[in-house]
Every structure is written in C-alpha cells, then in structure tokens.
Image (cartoon, rainbow, N blue to C red; front, side, top):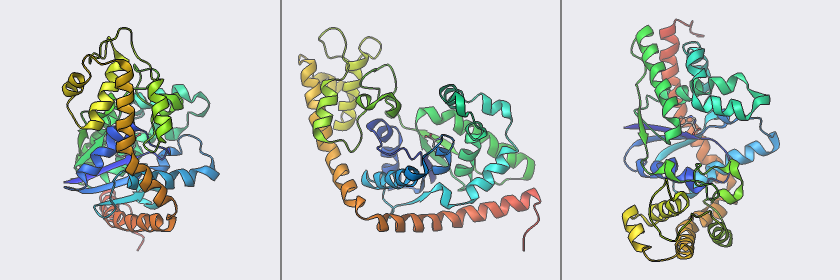
Length: 328
Ligand code: TRP
C-alpha cells in the first residue's frame, strides 16, 4: 500500500505527537511503501523567524530519524524541496469551494487564535495538504483525529477532479491511530497535550530525566485516592494511566490492576521512570545526529529525488488532463 503523511516542523516533538502519528509511521514503514514529509510550507501560515525556521525544519527531520523513521525503509523529505506540491495546490484551490474551507475546525481555531494574521494560506491550507497526499497516488494516510476533516476534503477534491477530467487520483483512506489522540495535557488533563500550553503541560521525546520526574511529580491529579481509569471523573489519573500503558505496551486494564491499592505518588514515579527508560535511546540518537548535519542533508536530498519522480509524473498527467499547453 502507498502511504503518505506529514508533520509540521515545530521542533521538540512531544509524547502526544509521537503516539498520535509518528509511532504509527515507524510501524507502517516496515510493511508499506511510505512517503513522509516535514511540511515547512504549511508552517508558513504562521509567521516564522527566518533565522530559526531552517533550523527548526532540520531539527524536526533529525527528531523523526531519532525516534525510528528509517530513511532506508521510507522516503523522507522536505515539502518545499518538491515544487509540485505548490503547483498542484494552486490547481486544487480552483476546485475547492471557499465555503468548504471556511467550515474546517482547524481553520476556525487558528483564525480565532491569530486574529492579526488570518492570511489566505491559513484558509487554503487543506488544498496544499490534499496536494501533498494526492501527488503520490496515496492509498492510506496515518494521522491524528484532528486531521480527519482535512482528509475528507482531500477525498472530495480527488473525486471532483476525477469526475471533471477523468480518473487521475486515488481516493485515500484515513488511518487513525486508536490510542494517540488520548494523551492529554499534564496541567489541564481535559485538554489535548499541546506545546502551546506551556512547557509544564507536555513531555518532549528528548526530555532530560530530571525534568521528566519534575513534570510528572507536578502533574495535575484528581480528588480521592483511588487509581481508576475514568476520564470524566478522574481526567488526571486516567491520563497518567494511559501514558503508562502506552509506553509499557500493556492494555489499560493491566495498568489499572498494577496500580490498584497504590498511591498517586507511585503512579507518578513509576511512570516517570518508565518514560526515562523508553525515551533514552531517542535522546541518544538525536545527540549523535546533531553533529552529523551533512548526513541528514544527504538523506533529504535522496528523499526529494525519489519523491520528485512520482510527483512529476502525476503533474504531467494533471497538466495534460487540464489542457495546459506543454512547454516543450
Ligand atoms: N495538517 C497536518 C497536521 O497539522 C500536517 C500535514 C500536512 C499532513 N500535509 C499532510 C498530514 C499530508 C498528513 C498528510 O498535522
């Protein structure tokens, strides 16, 4: 199966990002034909500092490799290195009703949070995302729950193009990871874990042990003493149990049983030690790659080359279907 997915370059991926999507990438790459990209062009919908931006993009690539995305098993590249993405996005812009774009939850959210920079790119973001996916004749897209609506739109665009101009694109399936979206903020466990809620609310995949211990010790818990999984009544404890179960690779029920008759402090300290253990190789690998920028750049170069081969073929077909005059 052809798989495609993308991630924004934010730097310092956290455990929620990992469990939500990237962990699934590392599993899919062993069995499927995978294309993974760092979507730097999407990130421009929020104003970036040019001095930092390149570093952040490179850091995200480095982090992906550190947590197990293997450039020998997949095609790993930067979105801006393959120009066909923006070309196809433009064409999709002409097929997408503005009313559909205005309905998107992520757009409404971001527009509310960035009142001073509601740019056209923020609105047409899903058209670029559809281009990312459809360029590669993608069959499956692993994403977190928050991206389902964008995937539906991508399918709609594929269908519309195919109906108007003849079969050109595959309508991709959404592969939502069951566990991912459930990781909540350590400070406000009713909200999804997110970097925008302050450093105390999330744990980076490359966090130092002392800091992991501190954040878990200070994580919000609930009234009472009992350790039970009940997100409505005990959001804090349920979140810690979830994190524990996911990193221990055991069912929630088993985690619950393990902590029966133990105190909140034990849940926190055991979860901290578990995270420290599992994340240790990620941290080591990132440190190692940090001094090997040339190697990472070579990976990106090879990735873009492979991606371009597929993207160019799709675009040629698209241009000819649309009746654009060939340049030679
Ligand atoms: N919009 C996605 C996110 O914010 C990132 C993304 C861009 C993506 N293009 C993609 C995800 C294509 C999957 C496929 O998480």
